[in-house]
Image (spheres, rainbow, N blue to C red):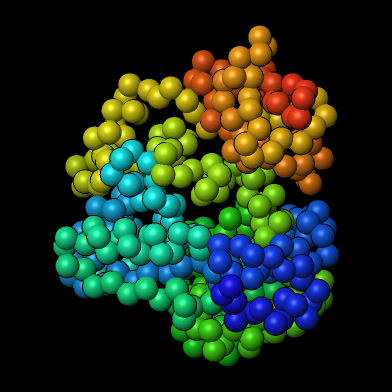
Length: 361
C-alpha cells in the first residue's frame, strides 16, 4: 500500500487505518459523528494527499483542457478553480475533477485517488494538441482545513488576506514559513474552508503549524468516514458510487458543469446535448427516509406496487439531521421532488421521499 507523508502522524494520533484507493488512510480518529460535527460547527483537518495532480502546460494547454473537460475553461481568469468532469467518449464519466487555472499556459488538474492511473492514461491518450503533461501526484501533499473556524486558524499562518479569497479561487504564497504553497478556497464538505497543496518535504512542518494554530479551537484530525458523510449531506457526488464510466453528467445532475457553447468543443458534446434536449430515462436524486432505516450503496428502490425503479448509490445516517439520507438513480417518472418511494432494506421496503439536495439548508 502507498502511504502519504502524514501516515505516521495519523497513527500517532490514534487513526484507525484502512486501505483506500491503494493508500493506507485513516477512516476515523475520535469517531465519525464526532469528527463530522467538528467540521460542521468548528474546524477539522483532512489528509487528502492521495488525490492526484496533473500539470498541463505550454501553448496548447488550454486546447487540451477544454477538449477533455465538460465545463468551459474560457471563462476562467488566473487564480480561479472550476469543478468539471472528464467524459469518456461513450457517454460516461472517466472522473470528476478540479481545474486550476494557474497562469496562461499552465493548468493543474486535481483528480480522485482511485483514478490517478486511469485518468493519466486518458489525458495522455487524448493529447492530440501537443500540450506538455506532468503527473506530479507522488510529489505533492494536500490538506483540507474545513469548518466555520478554518479562516481564523489559517490566517495566523499567512499574510494572504484569506477573506479576500472568494469561493473557488486560489493563490500561491508563503504559509507557515513554507514558500509556494497553493492556498485554495475549495473543499468538499459544504462547511467552508481551504485546501492546501505543497511538496511532501514540507508536510510535517505545515501539519504541525496548523494544529498549533488551531489548538485554541480544539482543531481535530478528520478521517475518510466523516469526509463521506459531510459530502453526502451536501449532495456531492462520489466517483465510483454516484458517478462512473456508465453515468452521464446529465443523468447525474451535473448539467451545470456541462457547458454547451461555441467556445466549448469537448468529448461527447453532441450526445450530452441530445440528452439535455430530449431528456434521460433516469436521474440521480436525493431522498430522505420517512421510515426508520439507513439506506446503503446497492440497495434497490421500489414504487408502491413493489416494482424496481432504481438503486441507491450513496446512503448514510446523517449526523446533522439524525435521519437516513441517500442518493440514487431513479426512473424519471418517480424523480419529482416530494415523490414517495421505497428502499429495500434487508427484507423490508421502507418509505422515503425524493428531496432537493443539499440535504442541509
